[in-house]
Amino acid sequence: MSSLIKRIIYGMILTILTANFAFAAETVVIKGSTTVLPITQAVLEAYMKANKEVQISLSGGGSGEGIKALLDKTCDIANSSREIKKEEISLAQSRGIKPLAHVVAFDALTPIVHPKNKVKSLSIDQLSQIYQGKITNWKEVGGDDLKIIVISRDSSSGTFESWDHFVMKKNKVTPRAQMLASSGAVVTAIAKNRYAISYVGMGYLNKSVKALEVDGVKASAETALSKEYPLSRELYMYTDDEPQGETAKFIAFLKGPEGQKIVQKEGFVPLKLSPKGKK
Image (cartoon, rainbow, N blue to C red):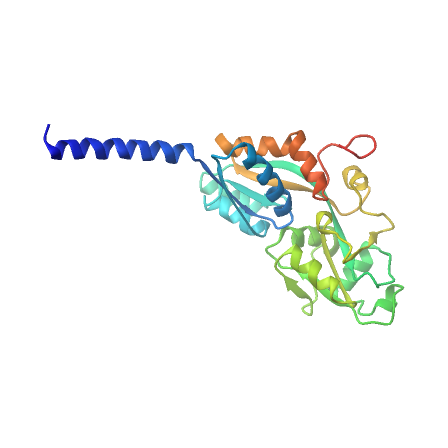
């Protein structure tokens, strides 16, 4: 056998082995909501400990960006804190994509202020008027004589879309509002500003900010799951039709007992609660 033929055979064998390795090391790409991000990151870490050969890429950018990536076929899972829109479904269908929703957790969209703010509860109407720029001083809603600084998520955010649905009801947010790109940035801004108000998913609540009741109801796992809390919502992962391979296994892990314990540990609401609210 000539050396040339040997090199050709060796090259073919190497190509086959490389292809088999690439196939074995399946990569799952996840993009989207910054609200769903901490859940996904924590579950991903647990999942990859037991599945070391799997490669999972995770990034935020907002629910709109995640769904756009799904429609562009640049991700396997789109994280979203809102339902997919009719126009997005139409665009998906035109591209041969069948968006399938997987509810992975529940959430309570929560107004937050600085811990020194005296206000404890606001109605949905008061929140709407604040965000429209019609209520501009905290004394108008029972607080100190301080100007209200309005902070909002940016328009590509599912959390912004949820706020629009529950609170604004298509009324425009004041142009004076500061628009921030992530829930983490919102918490940091509120913690530093005694005048400010904003909103986040309940998994982002910590001692640096104060959660407000809405219509006299406190956000909790129980009130979110029962929908007693008026700003309760589902958190989603979207796939193109029924997921396959590692994508299916990862979503099943997240919705299973171990994944749902992580959901609760991250401050969000698991799909089911025990009678005492403990998994």
